[in-house]
Amino acid sequence: MKIAVFPGSFDPLTNAHVDIVERAIQLFDKIYVAIGTNTTKKGFFNHKERLSIIESVFFTHHSKIEAVHFEGLTVDFCRKVHAQYILRGMRNANDFEFEKAIALNNAALAPDIETVFLVSSSGLSHISSTIIREIIINNGDVSQLVPEAVVSAIGKSSR
Image 1 (cartoon, rainbow, N blue to C red):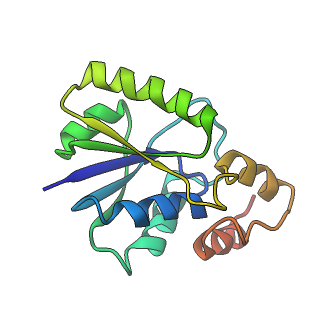
Image 2: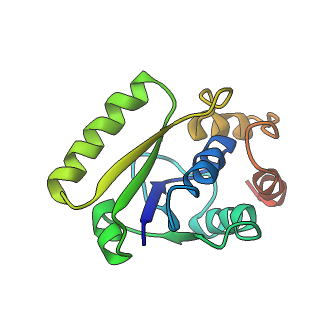
């Protein structure tokens, strides 16, 4: 069974994230969309809200996808769920350099876990959770950049 972990903060989940998962579903038997804790980022949605959003986007259509929260190293979580692959999306050359460094360090820590990169689909490479959070905080319209579940969650948010 081919199991992949797609780690990220997913704060918020974007159309680019959804595209990566929907394309990867053809490659893997199971994908964990794994919400990690990034201590360098200020969050907008809490972990519970992010899990709920991810579940509402994927679970009605894909039984091979599971949303989870994890703490610690991604490779340790991969071992816990018996994943052989880490799935990552890349938008541009800057992402490549950053992701390559992470992949090489993960390979040093866990040579049995392979990182698989998918390049953003055309028209989605400009989408960034960081930029979307700024738009949300400043009351901008993100409806073309995120799934409807995120738009609904923004409306329910007390922020």
